[in-house]
Image (cartoon, rainbow, N blue to C red; front, side, top):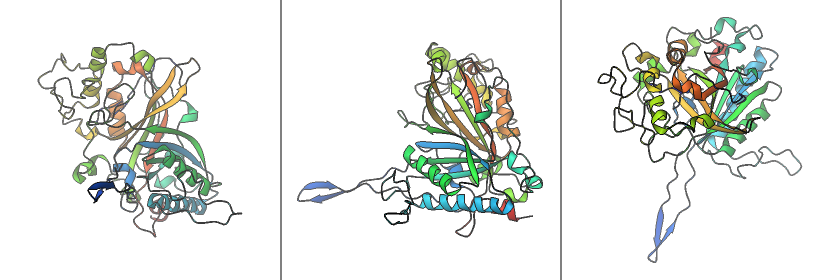
Amino acid sequence: MTDPGAAAGPQLGRRALLLGGAVATAGALASCGAEQPTAPRPPSPAPFHGEHQAGILAEPAPAVVVASANVLAADRKELAELFKAITDRARTLVSGKAPTATGIGDVPADPGTLGPTPEPSGLTVTLGVGASLFDDRYGLAGRKPARLARMEPFEGDDLDPAWCHGDLSLVVAADSQDATLRALRDIARHTRGAMQLNWKIDGSTAPARPDGAPRNHFGFKDGTANPDAARPHETAGLVWAAPDDQPWTKGGSYQVVRLIRMLVEFWDRISIGEQEQIFGRDRASGAPLTGNAETDDPDYASDPAGKIIPLTSHIRLANPRTAETDGSRILRRAYNYSRGLDSNGNLDLGLVFTCYQQDVERQFAAIQRRLDGEPLADYIAPFGGGYFFALPGARDERDHLGRALLEQG
């Protein structure tokens, strides 16, 4: 968990838990003195075309599915066809266009899980590429993003190979879980033979309680101190690929996926006071322990010895709020997961953590190293994920994700 600024067993783990819909409005028409409410308006489609993929800056949706896939395409031409197919399906799904009608004896064009006229459901589809795509299969070794590498374990990680890495990443977010699953199912159906899903996990965000950022399974608010995604001058230096990267990467972003189990049985045995000392925040309000409101900046200057906010607290290590560490902030997008029980009957709850940045080593990895040995590490167990590069956006109807990677240079 970081304040920007799973298949594992019940043993104690460590490492960072970087924690962190369009609501339709209904009008009313007066008739003979009585109010007759109109039907809710369906949500508008999310924008699809642009310099960046829309899902990167979008606020976390109520539901997400994060998946990894391995590419089966025989050559670079087939790889290009795969990228086109993913783009075409994502474009269609995001638009909310009605499925193509088929005859009664034909295979249906849509599984029908959202009914005969599916709505856009706030859908975004974000496609990333992993370091393994830049091997010798497609002649792309010389075009690998300059800061893309395979994710290596940090101190205390217990990574399961079955839940790590992949040639591609897909982050599908929407207003409901059935909308995310329908979209992933559609994309998998139309790319069969060219790619194969490697692993997937479902996540969700809770509504604000009572306000502010959503809460994680430990009861603390997640995502309070994110960089402001609406300020281009801030995202330019923190989120988007740097000018000195590969020319084709302009408009893309480095994506980190971390699957982090939260050992709630252990967490639930410690006092609220101890929990707040571990995080450095008030659990009810989300405020730093030196403040009164969730959005207050921690006052480290008046507490140099850490008597109020411990020097080992999560927020103090993750984001010291110094000039030297300002460039290590990340744009986090975190979701809760629930996967039933493990073999010992313990709840398998945790965080599907994703974040976006300009440089994984300078940002995410630097934060992780600062968090090494933090008290929170005794209550979490990272078990999967990977590093990916979220591709630049498709500029218009004629463009497709991955075009610049395959055609420029």
